Amino acid sequence: MRGLPDRPDGHPALAVCASGPRAYQDFRPAGPGNPMFSGLPDLFRPLDPPVSKRTLQGQSGLRMTSKIDFHSHSTFSDGTLEPYQLVAAAASAGLTGLALTDHDTTEGTELFLEAGKRRGFLAIAGTELSLDYMATTHLLGLNVSPDGAGTLDLGFLQKFREERNEGIYKALESIGKPVSRESVASFAGIGQTGKPHFAKAMLKAGHIGSRQEAFDLYLGIGKPAYVKKRRLTPPEGLRLILDAGWCPVLAHSISLEAPLGDYPGILKRWKEWGLVGLEVWHPSHSAEVSKYFARLAEEAGLVATCGSDFHGANKDVPINWTMRNSPISATVLDRLRGGLKRELKRAGGGRAA
Image 1: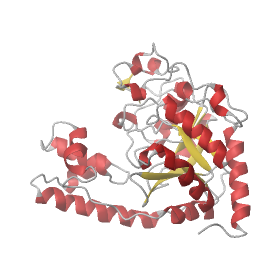
Image 2: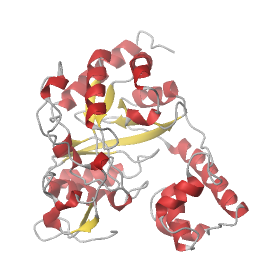
Image 3: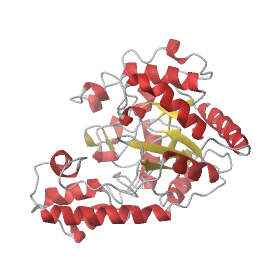
Image 4: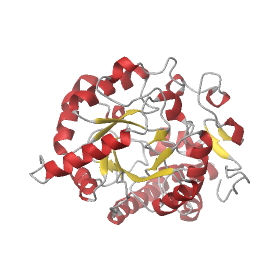
């Protein structure tokens, strides 16, 4: 996908959706009849009917389609589209806004924002931090300031990632499944190195039959080549994002793997720590889970957001997933800005430790 030229009309010549590379004309609003969803597990099918308005009590301004997506990844972490290609593909798919939230980095945001500016497209700088909490805890940081003010320096997190990657090299060698640094780097390209790149190198070396097998047998939690990365705690991650003037949103909350009955208490604590938003609509959430989190967001005073978690060819989710599966309109930006302003004001009086 690297270096694909734009079409004369400004659309990308090729883009990635649910079933891998598809022609431009397949980027149309998602629906049961759309071939991009054929063969996908129920978890990733469009909700039919969409989430009911009855589940959105108190969430003013929400409509039955979302043309803004607050969660995506580029080649600067584990996505397969470069930042400018993300903007082109999102605009072609019918989106009007997209946040770039690469893992533990903001290196691709300058290119992303420039591409958005040239197209008149709402491009939002962001990141996704991995935190030391429960199972899988990811926190989005979104620069929702109208003038884009504020920068977030995450350079120190790269040291944590480099330490983890070195451990993976050694672990794979110890179990007789070595991969070369050159091979892994060839898949990482200009971005930071992550486990998906190790998986591709393992596949190329003939150690596995598929990339998923790499995680199921070797790289996943509890497997022989799993190496835990040093992470920030939730209060540390929230403070880092808020101190930069960015808006913190808890991503795909179901990945915490907590009993559903525990989430009200969990979200109450996170709200005390400084959380502003909750990613309610996400491909890993069933319709019922999304309804549940929409209610919890309202009860906790959190702003409900949506995100496709688009990774290009690395995940079977189309870039316009939110258009069919989320009812949020662009007015959610105003609520995020308002929530951030209130939290920063509260923080001046002392935030919960």
